[in-house]
Structures are given as structure tokens and as C-alpha cells.
Length: 139
Image (cartoon, rainbow, N blue to C red; front, side):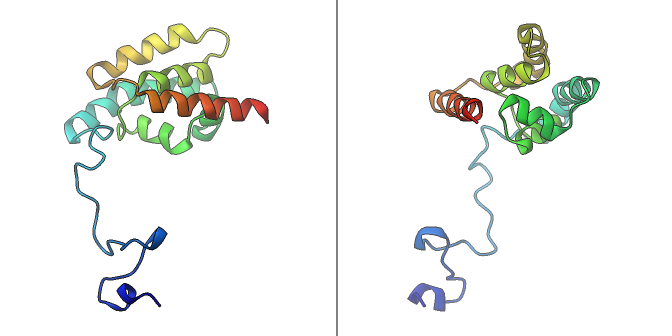
């Protein structure tokens, strides 16, 4: 047993680092992607409701849309519930999942619904999405 593990509250997490047992990460740790309560309510009523309507009109489940868009189902769910601010790369992926033949009009409607909550893309995020899409296509 590691010496830290014997101390009260000293259990070890992954990689031998001390786990913060019973503690939550700082509230602002992931703040850029998580809207506050008022913004979350607005996103859920506008962007989230639109996304859910477009998805259900096409007979897709959350998981079905996530698979077609090469996104995690939790991402789609969080976007619909207003728990996540969207990025342009995610909107493009959702549009391709919802309308593979002509995604651009759907992307524009989603971007308009997201409004000021739309976060800018990051190079790492774009690369990661491309990598996931390539892996999915190779299957």
C-alpha cells in the first residue's frame, strides 16, 4: 500500500496522484464550455429545443445522431439540455448527421440558434474531430 493511501483522505487516483476524495473540481475549471444557469436555460429553450426537434423529425435517437455526427452521445445530450456551449466544428458535425446530402443550411440554422453562446473552435478540437471521423470511416 502506498504511504499516502494510509492517510485519511489520502487515496490515490490514476497515475498515483492523490485523488480529491469527496471534493469537486473548482467551479471554474471547465467554465468556458459550461454555461451559467441563465445561459443554460436560454440555450435549452432555443438551440437545444431546435436540435431535439430536428433530431426527432428525422427519427434519430441521441445515440443515432451522435454516431452519424461522429460525436459522443453525452455531447449531443448536453447540447440539447443547454449544459454545453457549441463550437462551429460540432455544429458542422451535427449538420452532417442531420442532413448528409446538404448540411450547410442546417449548420446555419443551428449557428443562428446558438447565437452569442457559440464558442470559437480550437486547433486541437478540430484535429480531434477529424481524427475521430477518419477512424470512423476506416471501420
